[in-house]
Image 1 (cartoon, rainbow, N blue to C red):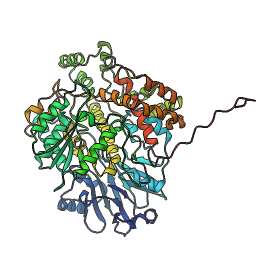
Image 2: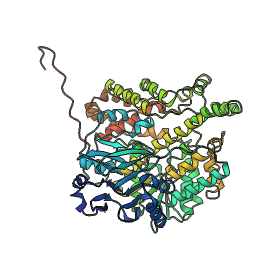
Image 3: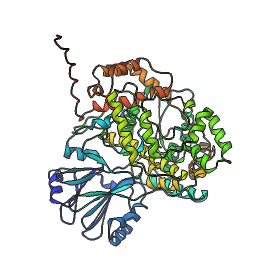
Image 4: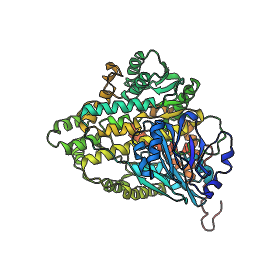
Length: 620
């Protein structure tokens, strides 16, 4: 579903003149006859509505508006802001593009699972639903500063809005883009988190309704849908929601290498309650490990498979490709993943911080139990609970902490602000670049003072990081013809969850109370009883050990070293001496994701490092 949205100008028309005549390319014109939307999308994934010649609305993705209601709303609208009503009620995940009298509105999802990209070329601003068509217009040129930033792994939310490509920009989350008649543009803020005020019964009803609509929006008549069945509540809930909607369901489960992980037991319990579905339980011996080489898929695209840059979920890419091929062979074009469920409904580490402020006395017993259950030391826990830094202050200070090693969980409680850590093999250039960008991003943080507003802001930022991950993965799997979807990250689900009172959503030591209540009656009570969560540290170690020879060979000609961002010998030494804790191994993920991306088709190869200069009067 790659598309370009163009202003109504001759200059924009000239940019895409050749593309408009290519086979399989859809073209939707402005009232003037010039191209408005140009791209590739399936007919079933697009809905076009018009009200006269100068008013048009397109929804590309999952979620179709009622055509008659949309036409009436479009006819009543005088300015683009009048279309907020449609944007606030449409279920699913999609891009919404509208045009009124030559001015266009282009927007994606609040979570950025659907993102808007823009670039200035030929004197006009053009927008797109993927970086791919913009790269065709601009050419591929890496922003090496942003690549250095990716060595951090987990990025603070403002920094997820930086494109790896020079000249391509990401529309800020919670905004829509206006394209003017003369080729200019502006970002318009339109969405803020709702107050968490709904009583539990109303919140359950709203959340259940939003989840049913989110899953139903992905279903197509006569076509199966694929879904994860990890055994956890999030993916299990999506499977039962799809079944309740009448889907022809295909589920996939990967067995963990950790003998203490009980995911498979719970997945089999859920599968037994879905006898009409086709369940795939991949034997451990047939399952790829983390960091296995990508099998890839033949293609002739001029841009890399991972058009957004290093794949956030790339450690398990081989599994994703295996799953995508299997789903495609069964006839599915969409795969449902439980990404976002933890962000919205879990008791994230910010909850104790909020609890200490919202219920400073009555919340003490719950805070004590949370600390004991997580084996947090008393002093750092108290210090974290007393932290009063604003988002901007914390982000500015975190720039000085990026070189610190990942701390032990017992010594670093409430790491809810998402401190980023750069790998120890990063060069001074990479460290200073990443720190500078983190400091600069502090100015982009909103002023959030009240603890409840801060919690809502944090949840939305966390959802945006997950949105980036699923968006990247879906783009990477495009050659297989299967889109990866995260219904929990849909706007309507996000709003319903955030509308619930905080204690009802996160609960005092109750496991995802709002989600559990919303799924009751759809998911069997036996599956709703689970309160554990599987760990996958064994996959990380198994993958690094199994692939160690290949990964060491990368160090012989490390592309990141050519760019001056990584010390190849330091990385080699670390691969040969893996630490005993997963936090110490985690930095490999970001580094290997960057290196593999640099080696993918279509990415400009970095120049070979220049030879070191000879000393005066010396010879070689």
